[in-house]
Length: 114
Length: 116
Image (tube, each protein chain N blue to C red):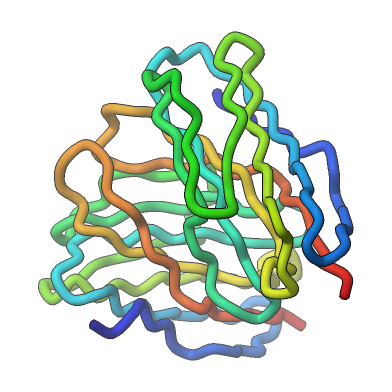
């Protein structure tokens, strides 16, 4: 079974631009979570989508948004980019039902904001 | 709000030796999960081991075991017979139980180097 894939793997943008990152979960997984990883702040939870609905949200400004499609693929959008948005963005998928199920991480998209 | 602390930013160990990574957390919850994740250099993060807070028995996975002290809110990871492939960032993480939307809280990580 194919793992979680993220595109693109690397991205360079300038301040003020917007960016869209994509995540394709493992087949059969309906939940996709997004995380931001930076050297200073570590791994921080952005949001989780399940069956096209945002189910959980971390403490990030409204410039960070996401959506999920009917095939469970998810996109994350960051508008009006700031230098501090430079980070590795990870997505993770899981089945999403029941009390606990393991989440599987993708390789990440490294975003550099100049 | 929950917090997770890893007091060792970097550690090193000789191949075949044993190393213990520390993790403490703060929560008012009684039911939760704790995890150790491994992120090798330029590779995907993978789950190493998980512990359900309601279980008193410490979890083990081959060479990996934990020492879970619920009252002390401590959750350390012991790696036995360290191998070069164990070189990675290790993250301790907390998840509240019963919340279908998994909202993980990660510690800052410990960079482990296994030396030949």
